[in-house]
Amino acid sequence: MIYMNNAATTFPKPPEVIEAINDYLTKLPIDFTRTGLKAKVKNYSAELREIAGEFFNCKDTHNVIMTSGSTEALNLALKGFRFNNCNIIATQIEHNSVLRPLNYLAKFGVETRIANADSTGFVQMAEIEKLIDKNTQAIVINHCSNVTGAVQDIKTISKIAKEYGIKLIVDGSQSAGVINVDLAELDVDAFAITGHKSLYGLTGSGMLLLKKEHKIEPLKHGGTGVYGNLTTQPEDFPYRYESGTLNYPGIIAMTEGIKWIMKVDIDNINLRKRKLWRLMYENLHHNEKIKIYFSEEHNSYGVFTFNIDGISAEEVNFILENSFRIIARAGLHCSPYSAMAIDSYPQGSVRVSPSYFTSEEEIYTFITAVNKICDSNYGTEDEDSSI
Amino acid sequence: MKILQFEKVDNCLDAKNVYDFVLDSIIDENFINYLAKLGKLTYIHIFENPFFRIICRGKYTLRGSLNNQIVRCLLPDEFEMNDVEELKKYILNYD
View 1: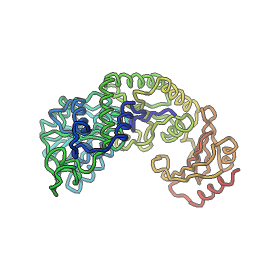
View 2 (view 1 turned 30 degrees about the horizontal axis):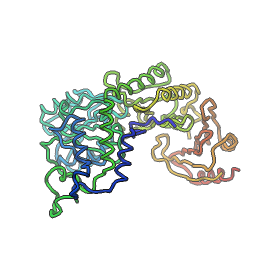
View 3 (view 1 turned 120 degrees about the vertical axis):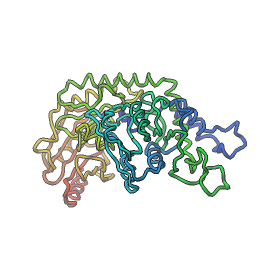
View 4 (view 1 turned 45 degrees about the horizontal axis):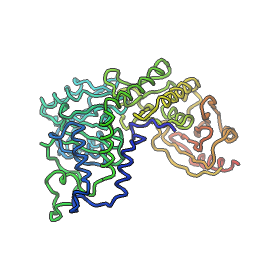
C-alpha cells in the first residue's frame, strides 16, 4: 500500500516518536505531581510546553493547553471566551470543527458570518473586513486550507483584528508542522493544533496556544492531580484547563515529533513536500480531464486536490485504493463551504497528501494511476451509469 | 462465497445508501462474470487490479476490483431492502 493521506493522519511516524512511546509504556507510570522522585521522573507536559513554546515562538506570550486535538482546542477557545449576543466572522474554508461549535453558539445569540474564499481557497482581507461591525467579537479562520492548501495571510488579518479590538482564533491543524508558524509575528489570541497530523504524533492529542492575558472558561472540570483539598476548579494555569489524567503517550509523541521537525528543519520538510507536489502538478496539469484545485501564490504544498472529468471523486478514490493500492481521500473533507468555493460541491474532490517520507517512486506510481484512470475513457456520468 | 461483513458506508457522496460486502475470498474473473449477470458490466482491464462496475438499473450499482475482497453496493435514495437481500443470497450462492 502507498499511503498518501497524511493531511488526515501522518504515517509513518519518525522512529524517535515510536521509541519514546515504547519507552513510556515500559516504564513505571509514576505521576510527576505525586512523587518525591522528581529528579528521576520526567514532567512530560512541562517538556511539551517548553518545546512547543520554542517551536511556535510563543514562550513568553502564550500558554500551552493540552487538548485531545484541534476540535477540542477550537471548542475550548470558541466556548471559553463566552461569546454572546454578538457576531463572529468565519470563512468558507473552515472545517466542521469550527462551523459546528459556531452553530452551537447560536443559542447564545452568536451570529456566524461567513467570509467568501476565492476559487483557490484563499480569503481576501476585504472579504473579512466588510463583515466587521460593532458587534463583531471574533474572527476565526483556518490557517491552511485542508482542501486546497491555501495559506491565509494571518499577519494582516491579525493587524485588522487588533485595529477593531476583536479576537483572532486560528485553526492550525494543517499548518503546524507544515509551514513555519511564528506566533510572536502572527499575534493571534488562540491557535489550535492537532498532534496526529504534521506534528507526527498520535490521534487524540493536541494543544491550544492561548495568549497569557486571556483567562477563559474551561471546557472540563475535574481532578488535576494537585489541590486535592479544593472541590472547585483551580484557577491557576494549567490546572484551570486540564482536568483528568492527561494523554501522556500523545504528549510524548507530540514532543518527540516537534523535536524531530526541529532537527530536520521545517524548511527542509516543506521543500521536500513542495518537490513532491510539483512532481504531481508537472505530470498531471496538462491532462485536460484533470482539474487541480490549488493556490499558486499561497500554497502550503501540503495537499494535492483534484477531480477527473466524468468520474466521481468517490469512484476515483475507490479505484486508487482497490485497483492501485494507493490510500488517498475523497469527499468534502469536512469543509462543505470550501467545496462550494472551489466549485466541487456536492461531489467533492480527491485529496492526496504525501509526507516527508513519501518517495518519488510512490509519487510516480500515483501519477501513472491517475493517467490510467483518465485513459480508461469511461465515466460515471454517462447515461447508463445511474442507479 | 461467504460474506464476512455487510456494513453501511456513511462517508460516500455518490449515493445516500451505500453498503460494502466484505467477502471471505478474493474476487476473481469468474466471480465478476457471475455478478455481471445481474446487469451491465463495465470492466477496466488496464489497471493494476482491474476495476468493474455493474449497473443493475433501478436497483443498484456494484463496484469492485479484481484481487480484492470488497464489493461496494450503491443504492438509490428509495430502495427495496428485498433487492439487497436477493443480492446477498446471490453472492452466497456462488461457489
